Length: 330
Image (cartoon, rainbow, N blue to C red; front, side, top):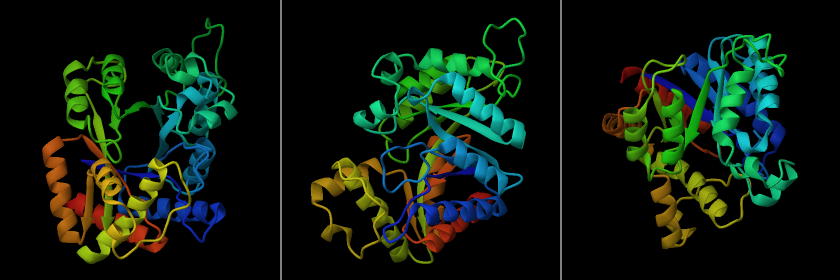
């Protein structure tokens, strides 16, 4: 089973965007050496702690600094963009880097409504996501084999056949991916509530296509691995704090870890955060191995994609290194 990595190019407190991008570059090289199959970057806007807003630009940079690992978007939030321009951008990436580019598509805006307006996509059907299925079909068409009769063609784009994934955290994405015969990635790292039902719907409803002859489902797992259980638990407190602040409408840079999360979050807030982040492996190598084995055994994904917001860059590198060693054995 392949294992991949999802990066939001986190900006820790005490650091800046330039350093965050350098960290992502170093992490990508490290991930390639560790055998990660894909390295995906996610589009978010108006988030001081996330530096991957210009996702296609950063994908190009990471692809230029690696040589074998697939590089892609996990994902591009399609309501923010004209499908034609996404086809041109990813057609350009595929023309530069060959068959190493992935395009994961999400239906959410990846931001608040005021920022969605600033993205200049308006507040109509595209911005609400209502046109998402047709936008996906149009986008795939712009990257499909050349059709000289087509009135609108993407240059670059046509003929690049960049693999398209549907991302989701509900049954909507599962149904669309199944209907179109596309691979499906579930955002279980922050929204696991519909995980089991979505995977079941996707697999049961899947219609073979020119892209896939059978369903291919990937699930996201948070990993906070360290030399000891206590250190893994401590590393995790960064993401718990950051997620709580986001839910409370106070997004910021990535906070440093704390010794006891109960001293920093109210019980009801912490309970909600822990429920949202329950698809997580945390602790020493032995503990993480046991937890990853249980998660993978229960849900039987075709592929897993690991993520984890960790304040210290070296600790983050080490966490993914431990996880890669475990998944290589599994």
